[in-house]
Amino acid sequence: MKIYALAAVAALSALAACAERPEAIAPAYVSPVVYQDWTCQQLGEEEARLNTAYVTAAGQQNNARANDTAGVIFLGLPTASMAGENVAPQIASIKGQQDAVRQTENRKNCGR
Image 1: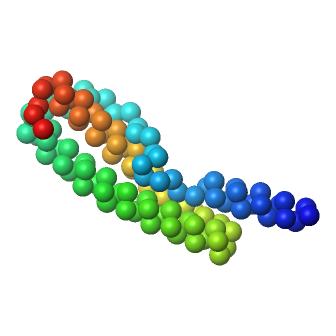
Image 2 (image 1 turned 90 degrees about the vertical axis):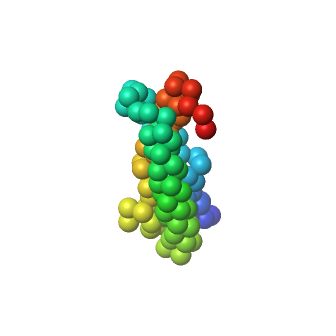
Image 3 (image 1 turned 45 degrees about the vertical axis):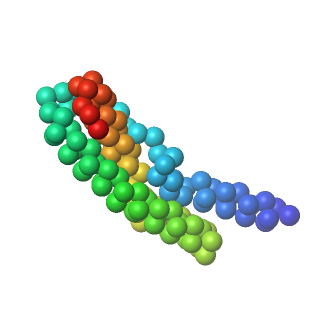
């Protein structure tokens, strides 16, 4: 009975270490002051660049999640996160930059 309890705790611990869903990652704070001197056109271009960067990073994060799940199932370890495939910090940074750009666009009344 103790072995089953230990196995369950180990499995839950391993799953807790798995890479998060990109949508669940909170944005890092980025000051909108960085963008205060940018024109609406520059802000729009930056927003497009950040959107592309987010899609790329989200794909990497989803792959890390899948690899973590496989690692936990077959080895009992979140192998992708352990190998550095988890890109949650980059996603948080991109989301923070996106928020700051949107705030600046709103403040400047840039049409979207």
